Image 1 (cartoon, rainbow, N blue to C red):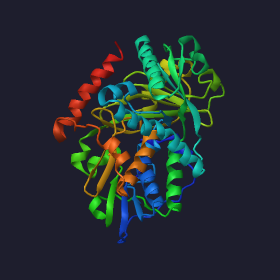
Image 2 (cartoon, one colour):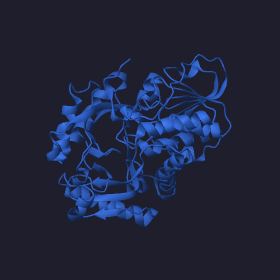
Image 3 (cartoon, helix red, strand yellow):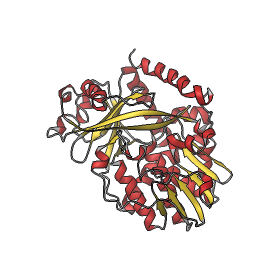
Length: 408
């Protein structure tokens, strides 16, 4: 079935991949992984590396969901600052969270190196301050992060922003050389190839529920679509629709993003953008809290481009696409275990790095080592209020409130 939301630059520039068969197996597996995105692929690969017999089952194609559609931004950490985590959970727990969440940067880079994944990896990420008060808070958080946890970044004063971005009218920023960007679909396909080589049986176009596969343990890694597998667990997230475009290649790209860093601003409904390997501007702007897409995705995103880079307002857009981001109530990942079922979802827009880590933690838990998994599994979570009918409307009202604050 053709997906009108998947006219993506990533699909057009994807590395070679031989489609896998539909699941019809009666074999018994040690582990069945449901979901062929970063989390599921990482979990399947890590399980196979532990000597387990693994099947990975994807309802559509590898990287079909958010893993193959996101902005490709590699942002270290979680949606909470380390100061907030320290204040909420105390130093012992926050240190354990830091070690894992920020260590995810190295986990992704090691996977890319070990498996020779060609995914256009680039270093450098800038968080740009939309308001002066945002810059003040960002500086305090960056200073705290370095002093208390040893993570170094660069404070960029407003007058120095042009070495990274020439547009947007921002009020300073924090540049993290350990962050960066990549081609997310090619990373997913690289993980899938590595998993196959490690012995994982991959099945595509295979929608299953946990009871459909004879397996000793089941890992559910479907993020925004968990409600289709387990309705109760699915109520811990809501899907927020995000939309991206890719322009034609820019001959004068250095006039906009001269350091080739990825950029995300500090608004609640943020703009985020970067350059592709062939120097297209890949830009995500705006959110929609209903799943009905804009009639014209290019036009929807173009107005946000014009706000940041007015001279690109009429630049040709070659690709436009969209997808859902699974967001939890507190915007921290939701991980856990129920009997032989293990799950991880709700990465809340910070998943490009942490999902690889989550997959490896799921594999550790399946193998009986719960310590690192429990660092995340013990984070407090609540389902969205309102039940099946009212959860999304109530959440939408709250999100619209915060979106309004961007304009004040």
